[in-house]
Length: 108
Image 1 (spheres, rainbow, N blue to C red):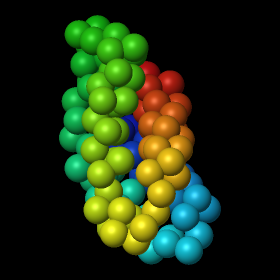
Image 2 (image 1 turned 90 degrees about the horizontal axis):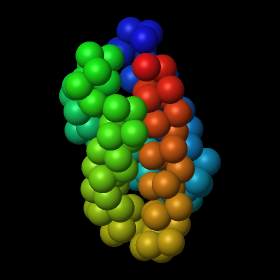
Image 3 (image 1 turned 45 degrees about the vertical axis):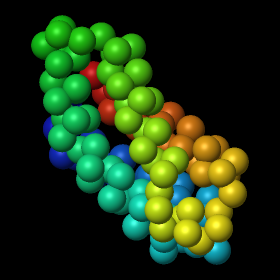
C-alpha cells in the first residue's frame, strides 16, 4: 500500500473536486462539508486499511464500514441549510463512497 497520508491527500483532492463540480452554486459549502467529513473519517480509514493489511478484516468488510459511515455525509448541515435536495445529497454521497473505496481499498 502506498503511504496512507499520500492516499488520503489524493482522496481529499478528488473529493473536493467532486464536491465543487456537483454543487456548483454551493461549492464553498460543499467543499467545507466534504473536507470536514473526510477529516472526521481519516483515522477510521487508516485503522481499517491497517486491519485489511494485517488480514484482520476483509476488503469487503472495510468497504461496508465506509458505506455505513458515509450515512453521516447525508446529514451535511451546511448543504442542507442551503436547500440542496436530498436526492442530490444522496447521489453525491454514493459517488463519494465509490471514490473512497476506489482510492483507499483498491490500494490495499
